[in-house]
Amino acid sequence: MHRTSSDGEDGEPADAAQFAALKEFRSAGRGFWSDVSEKDWNSWQWQLKNRITSLPQLQRLMPTLTPEEYAGTQLANTKLALAITPYFFNLIDPSDENCPIRRQVIPRIEETRTASWEMSDPCGEDGHSPVPGLVHRYPDRVLFLVTDRCASYCRYCTRSRLVSNATGYDFHPEFDKQIAYIESHPEIRDVLLSGGDPLLFSDDKLEHLLARLRRIPHVEFLRIGTRIPIFLPQRITPELCAMLKKYHPLFISVHTNHPRELTTEVREALGRLADAGIPLGNQSVLLRDVNDDVTVMRALLHKLLMCRVKPYYLYQCDLISGSAHLRTSVRKGLEIMKALRGHTTGYALPQYVIDAPGGGGKVPINPDYILQRNANRVVIRNFEGKVFEYPEARDGTPLFKPSEDFLAPELV
Ligand code: SF4
Image (cartoon, helix red, strand yellow):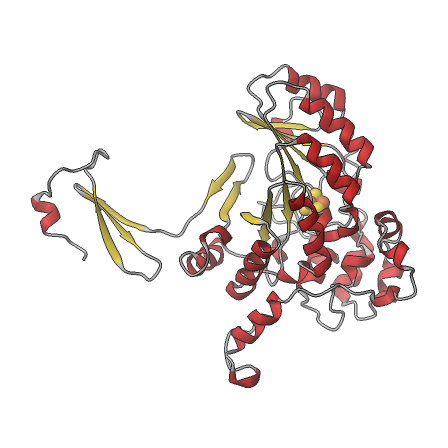
């Protein structure tokens, strides 16, 4: 998957050939479901009803299951349920044990191994929860958890303690209490609906919630966090988009990790949301052997822009229990960001962050571009590694004439 050296076909560098292939938009196709009617295949209800949720189903569709996957799938329903929509399943390459799509949704036995620093609630959400299903960690905004269900389950999910209810967390959001809390806190101007996946609700149920939130005068801004356009693009119907556009300003954050997830079906679904005037952002999680590679990440970011989605955050994988096999180093994340900044469109760049373990919130992590601060200058490095100076007094005031010190620079 991650070819980084030698030549590809036609004498092109391997990276260039791989990059071009990753950037292509392809349909997920029909795969094992070629005899299903067009109507059923394009029905989001049919896709949900026919998800792969058990070991026998998975074995039948993928006889190439490794011993690690077999053992992991046997235990999955005690940790985080197995569920994959037929549409998304078709993106898996059954002949590739390291397929980046496969690594995200097929359980592995490593998920049952927990290091002492791993946690069931790595972002400390439960400790910032004034009422069930509402997280109020930042001063002017709240996370409103609406459901514990998703179309498919990501094996590194930060909220796996409650999502899919495999651990018996028994998540029961209480909309009346959640909304009453927001109503009584005028400092809350931004509400992010998440879960689980809010777009699994019917149009009517979701509209009811959005309308109630919209009626609160101090709520300026609504957001929905969802992976549905990626797992189940069939859900993004014209009717859903027409309903959502009544509740502007409404933003949507999608979640995509690998360029192969951006198919022609997904591009069309995202286009329908964008045509409804909904600004779209993307959150990715940096995952070992999925997207911890500059070529893969660049292709993902370029394709997102082509889908009218602004890359928003790149998360260092949280210290969620049993995720060590999917985590990669902060050093690698910084290397990727350094290789992208200046080398591609600024709009394509997400902010790389660590959600501080235990509940400290998002901390932006950047390669070092400031090399030094001296009495009269800030010494900076550009994307090519060249060094420059910006004159400024130590207290930040502009300088009106160069000082002795400035005329004898140390580094240039
Ligand atoms: S879609 Fe989101 S909430 Fe659902 S399993 Fe994946 S990361 Fe977790």
